[in-house]
Image 1 (spheres, rainbow, N blue to C red):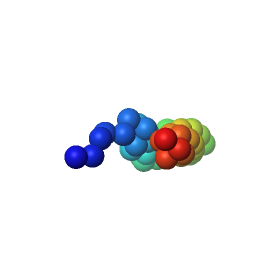
Image 2 (cartoon, rainbow, N blue to C red; image 1 turned 90 degrees about the vertical axis):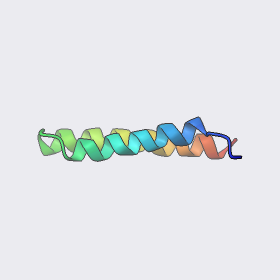
Image 3 (cartoon, helix red, strand yellow; image 1 turned 45 degrees about the vertical axis):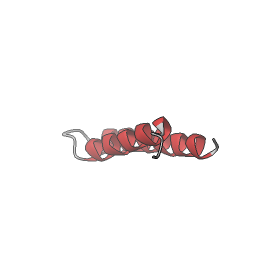
Image 4 (cartoon, helix red, strand yellow; image 1 turned 120 degrees about the vertical axis):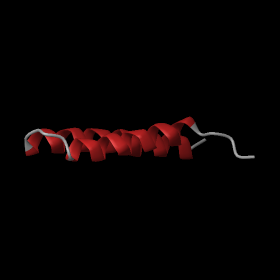
Length: 52
């Protein structure tokens, strides 16, 4: 069996939040800021999870 990787789970959650940010009822600048912040967290989590 495969063990659950909490880094991968959290990265997937941040990717979902990033996509939700793009569809939010906010200004474009706000949506892009939220999207970029969530994607940066997702990439950092994937890098940290892959190092283990």
